[in-house]
Length: 397
Ligand code: HGY
Ligand code: MN
Ligand code: MN
Image (cartoon, protein in one colour):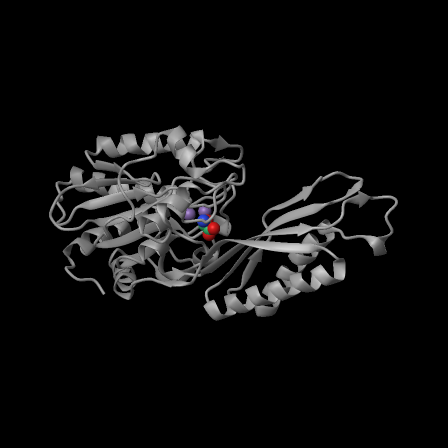
């Protein structure tokens, strides 16, 4: 709740877009909590922050998530996983439990990707999936440069990337969807993350007078943008299954009531658990846009903002989460994640899995996002048991 008060917005949510002042104030608060726990704090070259409780020996068992939010975010997306990680360490300290391995809690820079694409930005650099220079030179939707913003908020750290791989990684996160609530299940043993394809599409037409230009002579980017949005909805309906498509952002220029626009810029967020179907969807969309170029006499260009294939989590950790949930008398089910998460990047370098807890009415990326306290507690307790058990497992997978 203290963290949620930073960047608080109407409706009980948070707005802490990556590398803004509010993101800085949130970072400063969590770093202060890490210090109170006596953690060794490292800030890396893209602002990922890792607090490590240096007990035991060997590489750490790591947890974590993100504390940046979308512009109309909730209290729990990302924040739960970071604060539950701190709670795990505090609980061990309060109960004189000394794990055999160090425990680490991270918050990764710009998981949301809403200001600077791609999403899972910091964890991608952390695991060596994006080089540091390209990351620092990334320009946001507001024209800001990542490297400049990191310097401005004082989180241009010295720790190099890629980081040393942890022994294992487990992330607690709200489901952000309706499945657990609909099935009346408390814990999700997450099997993996679906594939994600983000594009920024620019449509250039001919600006003209809204009153004098005959319809047959128009090259109207607003019409083409709307056509693409409808095409995406129809594609998702045709594919069914886990196919989802979203047009989240449309900017028209000059965006005036009596001017046929000169330009439209829109974003396409297309996802599927099946990589072959995701590629098929991308190909269909590309073909449809080419058809529109011809029929409407416009020029369409596309810039790939994010492209991550589906990720399968480590079976031995997924089943550990299932077993520990049952041992702690929680209902549990396996399910894939519709949302992207930092865990999908850590999975590239160490055995990784996730724990979900229910989202009320499946709402997220919305100030009304909510998870009941009893479910937050169940998730945090399961994170504790999972991390401590992982400390005792010499080899995982
Ligand atoms: O886009 C996502 O799925 C995540 O919220 N960054
Ligand atoms: Mn998240
Ligand atoms: Mn999110």
